[in-house]
Length: 399
Image (tube, rainbow, N blue to C red; front, side):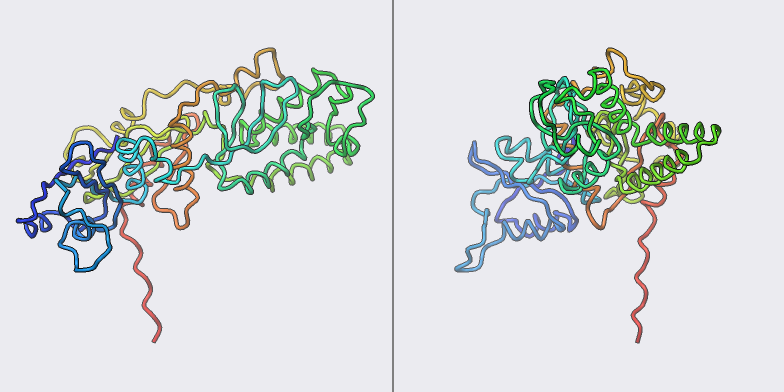
């Protein structure tokens, strides 16, 4: 995807000419070896020339620093305009040159997500780092497992699904748990509810997550209006407090957290070339081929920037099960298959890890815009202007 597009052969006898040709810019560098079958040296750096000199110049006597002067044949590198582009380039090159250990090199760890195990007859909702094509419903990613658990604990208080990990046998003699005693669970363990009633409760939970809380707030607002029209002010007041609780919970939900298969967005970063914006499409949680908008060149082309973006981002992916189910209010026989994740290639988890690492970094460079029904082209263009804007100068120090 992001290839190393520059190469410089290394000859110790012409080292000054070699170092002068390497730009003093941020990028990703690979030192290729002379011996066949030798593993190249891969690194990211804020200064390619300085990194090359550190590895290839004549070492000082007694120095124990790594030096490849006697074994290096050439260097390949790519200039990068942002930390995200650098990380993504490093990821692709590490996957290419060290396929057996690239995850350890990049410290890639699956992000924390919320899962509803829809294959179970009585599903429960919990936090996990394992994302598989097991027809489960996945929601995230979150900044940490702790953050996901904090959100989930508050969210589960709005529903009466089970939190236990026992095997449900529907035994009327089973004593139940504290959640069933507090009326916070429909208690399928001792047949406290029918299978259809529990299925409807799980559907409401999944639909609420799939719409990032919109389905739940809409339902509570309708119930509040009905209660008010019936002059049942006590119930209307209770529903209003419930709506406020839902609103407070959703305000703490990060923008990146949503159904994995609905995670469509574009990440905008400054390119290394002048007046260039790097556009990284994210579709279904997976990063696609980046697009580089070179505004110096685009000003003389007949196509507008919006047309170029449409050609790159279109045709739109078909509406996913979560998006298409906004109008569904009652579960049918096939609702679980509509929400279940059936495709989870290896790169999905890796790309989610890279994107969540960037999104939750502080400070975060660049911008991200999410697709709803369509790509927000106008907002993308305005964001490009902000990305290209020069950084605000720091205020002068007080004397």
